[in-house]
Every structure is written in structure tokens, then in C-alpha cells.
Amino acid sequence: MKALTWHGKRDVRVEEVPDPAIKEPTDAIIRVTTTAICGSDLHLYEVLGPFIGEGDVLGHEPMGIVEEVGAGVTHIAPGDRVVIPFNISCGHCYMCDRALFAQCETTQVREYDTGAALFGYTKLYGEVPGGQAEYLRVPQAHFGPIKVPEGPPDERFVYLSDVLPTSWQAVEWAEIPDGGSVTVFGLGPIGQMSARIARHRGYRVIAVDLVPERLEMARRHGIEVIDAGDTDNVPEAVRSMTGGRGTDSVIDAVGMEAHGYTVGKFAQTVTGMLPDKAAAAMMTRAGLDRLAALQDAIETVRRGGTISISGVYGGMTDPMPMLRMFDKGIALRMGQAHVKRWIDDLMPLVTDDADPLGVEDLATHRLPLDQAPHGYEIFQKKEDGAIKVLLTP
Image (cartoon, rainbow, N blue to C red):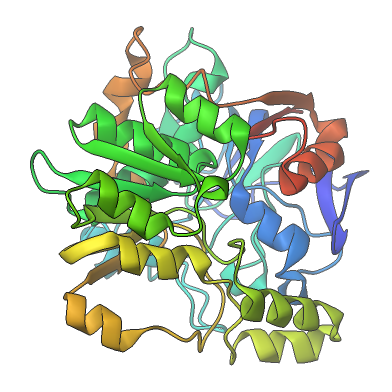
């Protein structure tokens, strides 16, 4: 089959790889019909190379048609249309019983002391072959796959794999009070959907970004926006819009590659120049993140407010302004999305003909799998108005 494979920094290629096969009774094989490029994939493209093996298959946002199931899989059958959550969870361990599916104890990667295994996402998370491919082996398929109805286009459902549950959790974790307000930093796919979900739930939403196309997309969905390029003090701009206090909550949908944090950028650059073994050691022991968005989030949230972090961070000793955070009484919530925890909330919205979250207005590029390297390039460079790229195997 054809699949997108990793070969080095900014070097991904579509190649022929062996077809997947059932290995365990709880496996399934799906034929991928749509798969997406995630902002987290760009961390593999740019920063996290020390933890990837050459030839690893990328991608963790797939959906498709079930081709084959193992003997232990009964809730799906060949021919079913399914979305595959990006995290791999068993559904019955201590963590899964508490709906903490991203911490599944059955698939935790104990070698690196990390949470549940993920599709297409480095040795840190199990090095499980990903979904930017024609076919995908799905472990723990007795629980993970989400059945979706026939009829509507894939774009209605593919974001249930990651974007929508991550965004829903970001809003939940933000603990916005009734009638309250939230600032969303970053208007990539997660920021866009976080802003739309918060507005759909009745909150005032202010969103911050630098990219004109992202700002315009948010405006189309009724979001107040701040162009970070037009002000040298985003927190002050937000306070001026909120009676001097700041918003009740903040969602950081940017993560480790924020603009404007010179120390973190330098650390990432140096790490990228090291041999893999040395780079891996540095990444697991040092502060490597560009923290401009998080620093602004801390200044933006009102006293006693909550910051919800959905953007991925990778450093181990990042400097945090603890005095400021303690003085303001800030609460922090963060982590990988517990995908299946939120599906019952989201399914009525994606099956509604009115498309209340505008899921059909998120993808800016739809490319065949053969053009995936081009999709990565324009998404990483924010060229050609790329906000979300979907691939069709």
C-alpha cells in the first residue's frame, strides 16, 4: 500500500509499505477514505525527529471503511463507516473506567513513562503506524472506532478523530462561567474549533492570531479577533475589551512553536543540529518550548481564572512565572484529549444538517495522498492560506 513516511526534518515521502494485517483478536483493518494533517504532525516534521524512526508511517486523524476485524471485535463489522480516535485505549482499565482514555493503562508506553499510545506519533507514544496511508491496522478496535452514518461527506465526521474532541475538551477544561468570556490564542484548526464551540455554548470569545486567513475564517463564524501583528501588547488589548480585568478563561491552542520566544526557538534550533541520541536526551531534560503564547495567556486571564492548554509542549524544564501565576490565583488544565469521552456531546452537532460548528468550513486544501509532502510544506509555512489539509488515499 501507499503511505506517508518520515525520513528526516522536513522530509516526508509517499512510499510503498507492507499492507497491515490482523495481529491480535482485538485488531481491525480499515481502508482509509480521508485522513488529515494535524498541527501536531508539524512537530514531527520540525522538532521531534530524535524520537522517530526512518520510514515510520505518520498520521493520526483517519476515517474509513472497515475491511476486516479480529475475533474479539463485535461492535463494528466489515463495511461499517468509522472514525478512528488518535489515542489508542482499551475502554476497561482503571484510567478508561474514569474516562481518562488518553492515559489508558493498557497502552501506556512505559519505556518512556508516557500516556496512551497514539497513531503515527513517535517512539514516545508507541511508534504505532499511522493513518496517512491507504490502510490502517487499528489496535484495541473492540473499543476505539466510532461508527458514523452513511450519507454526509467525510468532512462531517473526520474531525471526530482529534480536532473536535480536543477543542471540546479545551473549552470544558477552561471552566468558563455562565455568561463568561474566553480568549483563544492561536487560530489553527484547534483554535478555530475551540472558538466556535465556546461561542456555540453561549460564551464571549476573543481570538488572537497573526495570519490574515485564520483571522478572516474566525470572523466568518462570529468570533471577535485581535491581530497580534497590530499590537505589541495582546494582554492589554484584551483587558481594554473586558473592563480592565481580562477574560474569565484562556485557551492556549498554540503550543511549543509560538512566535516571539527567542530562547525556545534557539533551543529548538540547537536541538535540531544534534545527533539523535544527544537531541533526545536534551529534549527529555531541558526547556525547549517557545512560550510566548503561554506567557501572554498568563497575563491575559483575569485573576482567579483558568487557563486550558491544548497546544502541545515538549520541554521538561521550561521556565514558568510561578510568582505571577500564584499571585493571580490561576488554575491550569491541560493534556491530550480523551476522545471518546466527548463523542456523545459532539455527534448531534456533526449530524445536524445545519452544521452548527461549521465543520464543512475548516479544510482549506483537499489533496490526494501522493501530494501529502506538499500539504505538509504549505501547512508548516502557512502558505497558500493553508489552515487545514485533508488527504484522500
